[in-house]
Image 1 (cartoon, rainbow, N blue to C red):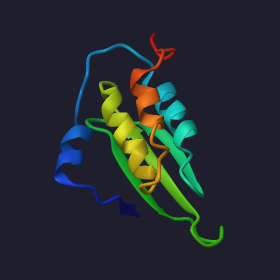
Image 2: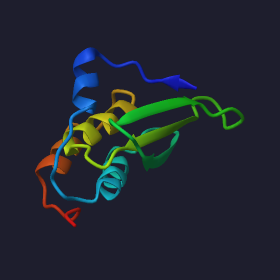
Image 3: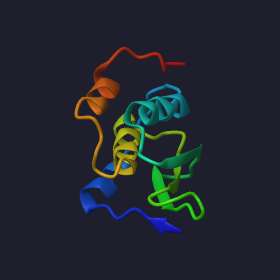
Image 4: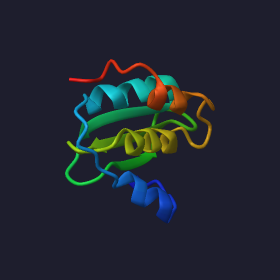
Length: 110
């Protein structure tokens, strides 16, 4: 199991919390659908204190196949979730994808 290496600034942002009420799991799923991490199967789960990303090689699935787990706590900010999803894209997200998530219409409100 390997943790994705990220800088200290991103670590702080992944710990960012927000009291806004919205469906964080649906937001994360929509972010993953927009970015579509290449050859990566991602599991979403509830987290405890901050957004957390773990990933590793998926043995037996061919060259470059990976697995990832994205933990989303109950008070995670949209920005923290979007940054975590961007990390999963291995540096190749569509330039507009995260802007769409953060500025678009909001079907995720509860």
